[in-house]
Image (cartoon, rainbow, N blue to C red; front, side, top):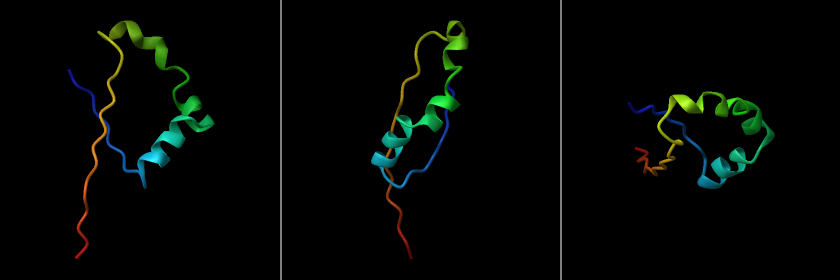
Length: 54
């Protein structure tokens, strides 16, 4: 089974800064509580897109 989420960031640096923030720590503080339900740790995949403005 694959779980996916999608977010849009102004830049990769903005995303990386968020992962080091207190808001990130608070949002993920209970993340290890269900690790025995999964086969392994999550794998982050990052995709960049190009938007064309008309």
